[in-house]
Amino acid sequence: MESQIQREEVTSHPHLVFLHQLMGEAWIDAEVFGENPKHLLGQWWKKGDQNPWVAYTESLAQEILASDKIHLDRVALAQKLKADYVSTLPEMEAAVFLLRQGFSVVLEPTYPEKGPDLRADWEETSYFIEVKTVVHSDEDSRFNGISNEVFRRLNSVLSSYTVAITVGSKY
Image 1 (tube, one colour):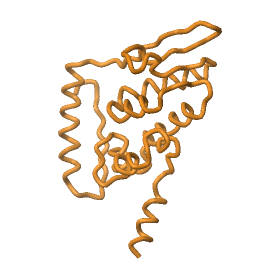
Image 2 (cartoon, one colour; image 1 turned 90 degrees about the vertical axis):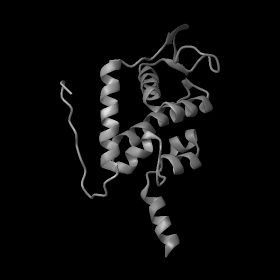
Image 3 (cartoon, one colour; image 1 turned 135 degrees about the horizontal axis):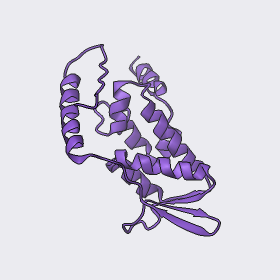
């Protein structure tokens, strides 16, 4: 009976074929589908298995790994996704956008040395790209601190309800 329950749990998870290829099966099982995931993908999955960010990240990984026009060090990308998912996701989005425009793309072209996030090649011309996110550091720090505290408190209460929080311009 117990093995049937485990089998049903395993089959209820999305396959995440490309994230498994990139991140490794053990990491995905522990950090996305595990009991107490520390990574954002796992925390989002745990909050709701229909969370769009898990499927979206899988779709980006699919386009990147399946394309012969994107070159990358898979270990380097996996390390970045594990360590800093929030800033790596826009880099993946930019790579996929450029691919769809017809560019050949290299992720982390100077790896392992520091350098630009992407190199996009078009008709024998290379463009080096550093992807940055716009932040308002003081406000973001305050907002993130408050958000973390709210979610810490909400996650400590067992409940079958969900909470949606909307933050206006004057938080």
